[in-house]
Image (cartoon, rainbow, N blue to C red; front, side, top):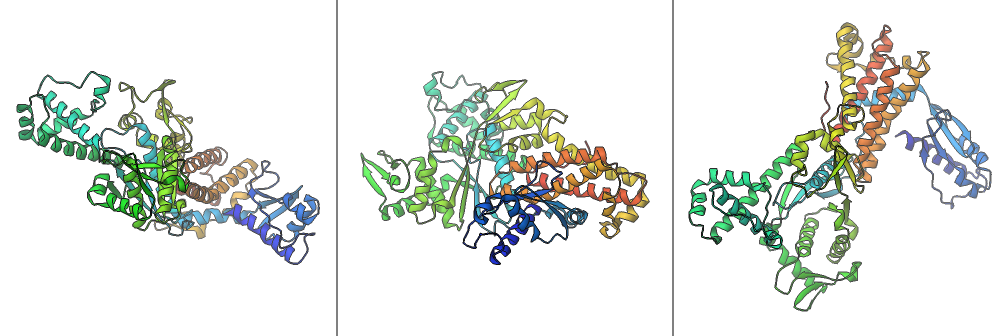
Length: 582
């Protein structure tokens, strides 16, 4: 990466000068930290390193310190100038041309890297109850989680994606009872959910179980009729147990189909129910007991988590013998660690902030590094329709992920869900997301790709022989026939300026990917896409591609092809389509 390249050039020069005692009074014992940046004024250069902070060691003015360091750097492929305490670098055409050829050579793998060093990461996200449709918050976790997994894999992490199914406990029986009522209603039995608000909390009253009831009657007609014929105002325990399992599996299946449609692919769906049935919860409690971190009080079993950074101790087994949610969560995370994962990466809602210390405490008690647990806390999504914010609770409004996808499409939904930092509240503007204007970020990016593809199609149609002869050998691009130096000898200052800016933006993709992976911030990819699309549109405005000069035309066509490849690579990471026509 060029920013790192120039930073390393400066560091190498500093170390060499210090070693030879040629940088004022600075010694090898002096610790320093430098960073590269892009100058606000492009006239100074393409990259800059501020060395002013070294003056406290050199005992020289910043400009003198910078001049000494600059004189030590080999300037074969770039120019250097000093402004105050800044060392500015201006790259030449050789380095710019190399960006294009490297992109065309490596294609979609141009920014692929190994900063993850193969670390085994289990990424858990969405993890909803199978008791209803996904709300739009689940959609944000799904988009963010899957994009993050793609970016981290691309950066050398060994990522395993898991969905934790919260299918144990009373909510599944509530689901079965609710389906029971919906089936009876299909047989026109006069029954409804309780009108009392408190009693209604023991049911799922949404319409989402109506189609499940219809499916049950169609698939299990004999059993359905028995339920209708034997109804006497009380639930048959055997039938209720059967319906609870049926509803759970149906809802899970619907969730899985929606996730696949939403380009979100999990390696495993881990059932909380199996965690209990396998004895892993009991085994974990036994382990904690042996470690001496459990105690009894008021008839309950407590985990002494306050000794390990939590604000207070936590109940893991209530006085009635029932486990708390924390108990299964500890066992689940213990199971992850026993499966050999060294990084437990979770995406949780912001309301789980207080849950992190108790889970870190559990990880530490069980003999693992508490830093192996990393939690991303996601903020809410606000839907905006015609300028009005839609509250999540209004069932008459569009609040489910299904509804949102039906309204704006998978690509727009994913892009909008990803384009802000996960710790920032997102305002999802429905009308803007559906619009085909430059103000809609996903349209703007996809249109850039379609426009680039159109340029290549038009070139092939208008100059077919030239394109085939100059650009390709068979079906492969033939870079040996390209003269990229023609890009910088047009005499058109604006064309050369926008071309240079575009190529530097292509090279910046490497940094964008690494930062997105290291900082767990897939939104940086959408930010990069917006900037690349903007630079490409400017290039298109000032640099006519299909021109009479065959050499210049081919060089610019190669640039367009490089843009296509980077757009495709970045859009693949966030799992949206790269249309060739719009």
